[in-house]
Length: 323
Ligand code: VAH
Image (tube, rainbow, N blue to C red; front, side, top):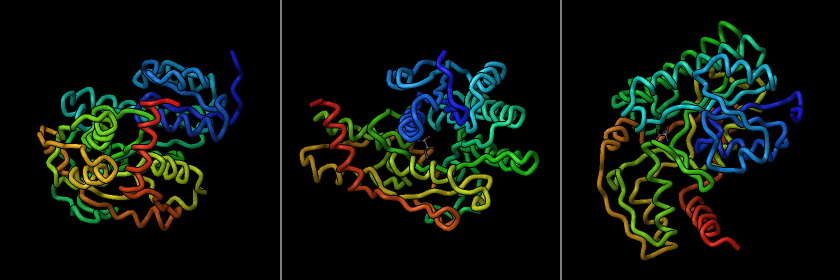
């Protein structure tokens, strides 16, 4: 077995939309042998398993989690495994179990086995229908009405508790909808904003599951990776919020992303067939106030909608028609 360096990083949920991209980015920055990818099943993306160490790990199996941490002794753990909003609504008990017991297993193992720093993603889903929708503040009314949102709000409070009671350096971001070309999302309400690009590049029309004027906070994956690593690299004394930081970049509606794509592909057509995810989207903010992230660790996004569209279409076309 190839020995892994002492400053190893473990990514749990490495096969997911964010996990796959984060593993790739961490391996590029620190060397593939330094980054252990783990997931409950082997990722479809062969690169994740072939470019560096991979472990099959169900985060609900605490003994297996401790075995992996004892084997690799990671300095940092990124715990990304969760059911997202739409999937968790269809499978509420498992959604709660995976999102909560999985987090407890990681927090306890980190304390017991000396992991130095833990990252855990929260989401704008922690806000609810009576939260101010425009420029939603860091501290405000939080009454999420989805299983996913309830689990993320509870998780934020537990992360803060482990920081206060055990001194565990656990850090978190309330991601908006994430959009990227390297991985497909799974079971989210914001997934339309990824699917729409794939349909456009394939020359097909797209049937959107949200109404055309549904504004949601969104972020291009390179910005999400930048924010995550900026947060994890910041000196501990700069981290003033130990529940989870609001994080923003842009907000747009299906109508606006369609127009952005049509500026490149004028014949692209979209129809609207809202489904149960519309109710979830209606309970979330339209835009986010992330002044604390900008103040505490100099957060600054790089991508707006048109810059993202240009980059997404370029890379998806390259994937479809390799050189
Ligand atoms: C979801 N993509 O749609 C996730 C995200 C803000 C949304 O948490 O469930």
